[in-house]
Structures are given as C-alpha cells and as structure tokens.
Length: 355
Ligand code: ATP
Ligand code: FE
Image (tube, rainbow, N blue to C red; front, side, top):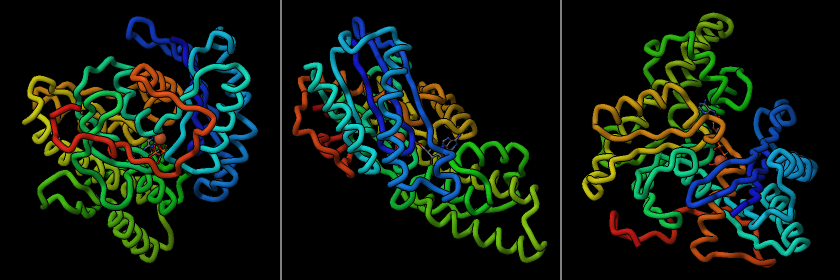
C-alpha cells in the first residue's frame, strides 16, 4: 500500500508518502512547510492567515512529497487527510484538496483524526505492539491513553485546563521569546537555574492522573513582574532561570502523573509494559529524559519518536489513515472537517478489555 498523507490542521502545511509492505511502514517522503514567520508579528497562530497559507502551499507540498518519494499520483492507493480536530479553515483546505485529488484520480479517500496520527506515531517509528500506554502531549492536548488497536483508545486522565504546549507558548510570550515557545524555552533553559523559582504543581496531591497547567502562567507572570519592578527589566539570566524553572515544573508534573498512569495501566496489562510519548511537547529533551529514567526504574519500555515526527507532519496521517482503511473504513465526497473530534469517544469503557 502506498499512501499520500495531507496535514493542515494548525500552522504546518504537510504532505507525505508512506508505503507499508507486510506490516512494515516506510516513510518515502515527508514534507513540512512551516508558517512561523507569517505569525511571528502576532505572537501566536492567526487562524485566517494560517488557512490562506495552507491554500497557497498545499499543492507545492504535495508535489514535493510525490517527487521526493519517486511516486506519481497513479502509484497512490489511498489519500489520507486530517479531517480534525484543529483550526477549521486549515482543515477545510486540506479536506478540499484531498477530495479534489480523490475525485480526479478515483483513489480511495479517508479522513483521519489528527490525534490518532500522533497516537499511532510510536508504531510508525518504532513498531510498538498493542496495547501501549501513551502520553499524548501537544499544543492543544494532554492526555494519558491506552492504545488498544488503531481505532480504540481509553483515556485514563489528562489536563483539566491548558495543554503543556500552550503553556510553553504562553510562557515564551511572557518572557519575550519567539514562537513556537517549546523550542525557544528549551534552548534558553540550558543556561538557566531550574531551582531558582518554585512554581505551582497543582493536582499532585490528588490521586489519579489529571493535570492542570493554567496556574503556571499566573505564577510566572508574578515572578516576571516582580523582577521587572526590582531591576527595571528582565535580564537574560532571569529569563533563562524562569524558563528552566518552568520547564522543570512541567517535566516533573508529567513524570509524576506518568508514574500513576503506569500503575493503572500495568495492573491490567502487566505483559505489555510500554510507555510511548507523542505530540509536539514530546520533542522536549528534558521531558524525554525524565520519562526515560522513570521507565528505566520501573522496567518499562520507553518509546519516543524522532523529534521531527513528534511535531505535526503528514507521515503520521498517512499511516493512521492506512490502518483505519485496512480496518474497513473509508470516506467519500461527504467527508467534512470537524473542529472538535475526541480520540476516545468510541472507546470501550473497560480498561484493558480491548474491543
Ligand atoms: P494538537 O496536536 O494538540 O492539535 P498542535 O498540532 O498545534 O496541537 P503539535 O504540533 O503536536 O501541536 O505541537 C506543537 C506544540 O509543541 C507547540 O505548543 C510547541 O511549543 C510545542 N513544542 C515543540 N517543540 C517543543 C519542545 N522542544 N519542547 C516543548 N514544547 C515543544
Ligand atoms: Fe499536532
């Protein structure tokens, strides 16, 4: 099977060609065209600008992916496109493009849940077997899921307010660092003292694996304002210390809650001790390192996809689309874009029961 994947749900215009032979996937091409410079002046992604840029760049991204893969449209067996969740203008652009291609070539079409793309990435990159415990941690989401098969996920808990990626982006804005916040915070935090500021870690005193990140930005805002008032500005070392303290706090909350999610998961799945991470925040090296050492101490396999496949890309969409297609799903010209689309809505109620 050779699949063309299309992704345009946020601010990356992406196209990829993935081939699966005897259950083994191979990424023949993965093109990601970012839009950071278009949104830089606004301090965040502007949906209307993002949608227009997708319309302009999608055909180039698809051409580039096809040409890099050495395939033509005639070689494509399936067109997989992100149909949600995400910024609706962008999702609509991708869906329309995919429908046009499918109509013109007669190729089967499938709409993919963007979150399923992230959630199945550890299988695409590392061949992780089902079931596995997944920490999906991205710009808009943060949840612990048990992945039973390509289409059923049980949610064990997650954020009750902001997603960590959002918190990284807001913190970067607050510190005057460029967007997206994750990479800029990670960079400056290398020279910072993570112990200088003690930031709130809400819900740690409560059982379960729910999390909260919205209090962090208020605490950071206060700390920043106190520094600005005392020193007449924010010195570079203050920025670095605030960034390092913030990053360490997020890492410790994610790690502590992963410990609890593992307890719950392992009770039902002792024979499959795997924790996988996915989503843009899973690209963070200190978060990866802490989770890695948690897993090492518990005798659990830790799987973290390569950085470029943690953040948005179309290879994960092609792969998730193919798995759904093999399971018998397909879409037609009535496929529509969904701004909201929870991953676990069709999941079994019982943890560990599979279907
Ligand atoms: P979702 O997948 O929830 O719909 P999204 O597609 O916008 O949201 P992703 O592309 O998966 O999110 O991730 C983007 C987020 O990841 C941004 O918030 C960005 O700051 C964050 N991020 C990227 N790299 C890093 C990093 N090294 N450290 C921390 N956060 C990072
Ligand atoms: Fe994403």
